[in-house]
Image (cartoon, rainbow, N blue to C red; front, side, top):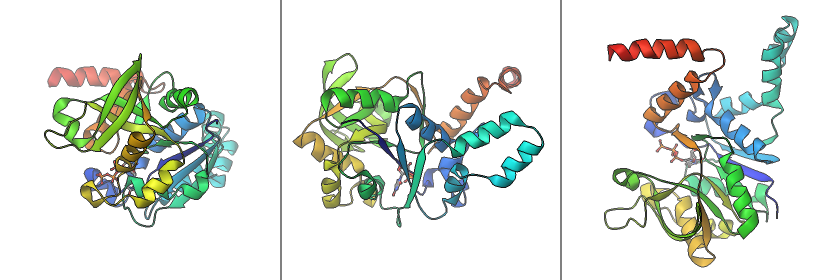
Length: 289
Ligand code: UTP
């Protein structure tokens, strides 16, 4: 079955990026001039996704506004003959069929995905975490969708993380199938010492089958008292098996202060409008460091 739907959970409280996230969703933090979540939506669209559900929560209205039409702004740009800006603004509101649903309480990523049940129905679907921006030639979501089409099992987007950091991520038991494709038969969220299965961790993208919903319904709160998607995917991996894809792309964690800065600096360096000047500024600054 072809994947046409994607779910973007964006209802987290963003406590690692306080104080800005007290009043501003981390998903709306800019990477130069574009909010993080726009990159995520664009990745889904360029992967061939037709319907997108963004899971929001209280205080996340800015996200809905960003993907809505903006008649006053459009009129102004049109009258001023600012065609490029107008095209860009209209493009955002025409990106895809975007739906919104509120997770009434931030009970965890697993719970956010469960909220998407009636939108998804019985189809396989992609999940793109709203705070993981990944730049690359081929959209990571597409890389995963192609593997789903071959194996017909849930697919996890993984990369190796540093040994000293694995306790902050999930850890997967994997066996090589070929190239960058692995069988995954077990996983654990935020492993303690002696619990690490491998340095491969799920980083922001997966394709799931609708079996996940019955499992999520039974999933009790885990690490951090949150309903963890990893705990549900573990059941799926043990019962049916899942596929892990060591994806190609550079990931920026927009849920962390350092990740936000890295994304901004690197995007600014290649930005069509300011790239040259920013490079010069950065070179001068580096001399002073
Ligand atoms: P994170 O764990 O990175 O988000 O979830 P968080 O809970 O906002 O982070 P901190 O630890 O408080 O800083 C990954 C993705 O899942 C969403 C987040 O918005 C993020 O995109 N999420 C998380 C939800 O939609 N609902 C939740 O209850 C939790």
